[in-house]
View 1: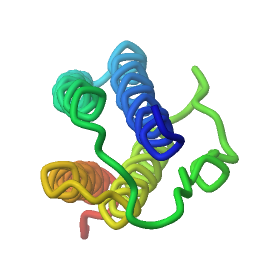
View 2: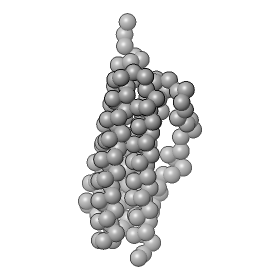
View 3: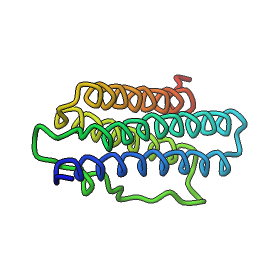
View 4: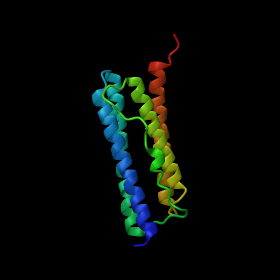
Length: 153
């Protein structure tokens, strides 16, 4: 197995880990939510992230069997994705939504980067799709934020 193939495998495993973390984050946020709508919103987001994980696991299996390679140097964007603030039990709903939107943005940026560094068209399209999904999630979170915290009086 060559280093490019190993690198892709590591990148996909990292992406799977990011989706698992996001699903757990939203599940935790659902458990923290006092508002019924907020709880439902975060449960739906958790399920969505679990679906993403499943899709990436399929690409990992394909990459392991077909040897998908990078077309550019790999930058896994690990340092860029570290969040300065941490989720806490005393976080307000407003703070949780801001935190969630930032996480979705970071995930989208990671997938956009990954789409530009793989040679396989299926992998490229998957990463582009994942980036779109994460940006859609960000929009959902921002809409929720706007609905609760930016309404005109």
